[in-house]
Length: 423
Image (cartoon, rainbow, N blue to C red):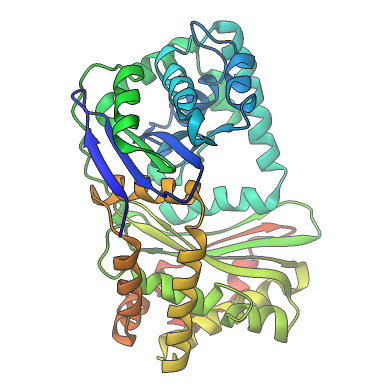
């Protein structure tokens, strides 16, 4: 039996909760349905910059006051920006939930964006961008996003570029926030030892915004993106590789087949890629698959880092394993094991209030409703070989394969890989 409840306030803000009576903690997030994909080229990175600025002070709180308000009672406060949403969240013991609501609401409504703080935080973000650039295991994913999404806004880096952030002025971000961070885009999600009606009362009191209807997502040309392959030279001891394919959107009816396929191909130490690339050949310390689901598309990715001399060989091994998957080599036992692994991962991952809070928020944005975990587990159990074949045939093809090699490489590496293995 789920403890999920939802209330839409008069101003359009949605309040959703999942009560976990056995917990004395609460995770709460104010989610705004906007991210880097909603930015123009000139605006790229502005949502992440706004995320930072909301921590720098309000009309009544300094940056120190914001940080200490929750830390002083044993809680914590943080935020993140993704390609589709921005979230400001806190975790506290249940008796201090009113403090969390007050601080988060104050940050969103009353941040001052002073010129001094703006100039300072802009420099901080540039250093953060430089840190990603100097970390190849992170930077390769920014390069891969552009390779798979072409010139679509999903291919933009969430943090933007150093030059782009340097060119932004305070008035730009203030105007962007006023236009886009409106009540119709906001979901307040909480999970743990929370009373829904009490939280609704607190949000009504603290998060006083004018009414705005939800923003209807504009039509996207994401299906027209043309995946590409590129080699990016940088002197290093390893080549970091990302290979992947456009995949299903968040609400696709065959979505769970992709998650089962992930466990079979690269979801753990028993997966086909881990066994083939690491255990049998020793080409990499780690190799794994991952998925990103968006409102109108998705990604199925594979990533690893390997010695320069093994980059082509390890890529060919990966493509060979994909080819085997395409040949319907999945046995009944392997399918059942992958389903059980996925169910276990889902259940174990939802034992914290933070994970539950994230799940109900993403379901609100993705489905405009809530799916109990029992229903999700039942859908996993129903994944069949036919479902897997449909996903495999849809996703894995050579002409839809994007790839990035980052390291001591030249463009010729792209010709040395046998891409037609998966044809």
